[in-house]
Image (tube, rainbow, N blue to C red):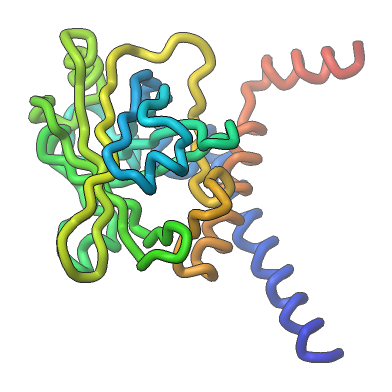
Length: 248
């Protein structure tokens, strides 16, 4: 067996191990592994950076947004909060961002950290992005309008119902000033089938890369396994219904 075949075999084994582990965890949990509790929202993303606008194909794009709690703890307990955003790129394909609360330092921005409330949340991409041939940058989102001091999803929903809820999206390089990318405005609860699963590895423009590549690959395996597991986590009644439908 040559070196290339050996590496392919190792990658295949690793993919199966990671994917099946996350599939099992999702089936046991009855939902996706991370951020199982959330709420779908709708709004618009307004690009303020020319490069970012070019990737979107428009200065303003409709956005589907999901706020969530990483562990799904009840009520307003401090939690790793999540903010996922889906827009369409200039080719009309989904572009997902999946962010979690992090620190603001060079190291703490790489680690999910709990937030006391929505008002103090700082969401980060954890992994770096590269736009075209540009430098590695981490995406960061901060509230731009007053938001609840608690981490309760229902409190956030009440805020959206009371008025528009805003965020600023920036790109943070290894050193130097942040680059403002866009403003996100959440205006209403999502009506219809809002996605509960966002995949920033699979759903992105070709000119946008997640770094490091190896971690992006592992993350893709984990997302795929979690999706399969959460889809199969059906109640006995739903399983019987699905089985009957397939026979009919």
